[in-house]
Length: 392
Ligand SMILES: *[C@@H]1O[C@H](CO)[C@@H](O)[C@H](O)[C@H]1NC(C)=O
Image 1 (cartoon, rainbow, N blue to C red):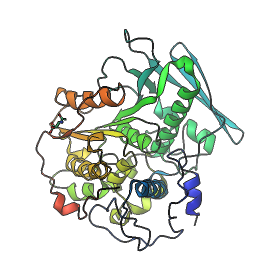
Image 2 (cartoon, helix red, strand yellow):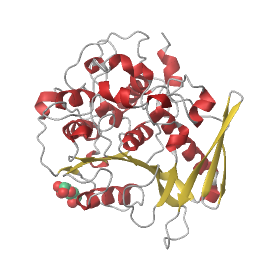
Image 3 (tube, rainbow, N blue to C red):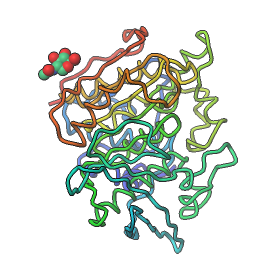
């Protein structure tokens, strides 16, 4: 089995490597966990109790990042020294080379009008933008399907990412897109002509691209704000909760179904889709990789397939991580009543606006957003059997 130290080294784009972190053992002894795994436990390290400090949390995040890559998403390649970018007429052209191969992709920047001279904050949107942005924020779009295709099972290993790393690379499409987002931020840092402030960059997407945006925010610590829109199962939903919600009474997408639909995950995940209780994490911990940076999950109760109850419960569980870090207002979740999929509803306008104004525009807004408009009942006591520590 591959050494876990190696996994740490290959995850450096995610966050700085802390020398004093305990190492995950090379061979894991996995228990079955029916409820949501305790974010504040060192599990699956043997016998080490719970974390106590914010530094422990950073180590815990490294473990979770390693586990998510190993079991579910595939590996994010390390930062490349070969990235070059050029900018002309609103288009950022990014070229990267690896192992004698080269690939190029483009990102299109749309600037705000009448908002000073820049550099501007920006929202990177997968595909196209499907949320309203306040004045003063630029939009950066790119074709994530060109980086990694997502038509169906036949898309496995196809796209610019796999041209560079090989069709059998472990990364599923979402990790490949996250890699591209990191290259966009690398390029903004080295291309002043693009006139974007790389410290004020958010990422967003809807539905499948919302799942992808969550992964991008989780695996690049430079992303200031992540907005996952209607990301549902495989995004803001927890695997265990999707399984529980399925058939109660309607169809909810589950892990077993999602891996048949598309290539968003690593093939390494297939082994766990019918035994998700053996995963040493769930998606409250994917969200937790973003903490204490800002995250807003926008969900839609109108589509049972998305697993709205699962997303609500999973994001309530994730919120405890920001509570433990003393910054509860830096993570918000908002479950809307029924509206057309990926058509942003007025109901959530203020929930979104306060987040973008605070984290991209630097305004002092109140980002306490814990909204459950349809009033779904998620009984925390059934799923969260741990208390929230006050991390020193
Ligand atoms: C922020 O909003 C929350 C929820 O509406 C409210 O409870 C809280 O008092 C507000 N905080 C401030 C400082 O206004």
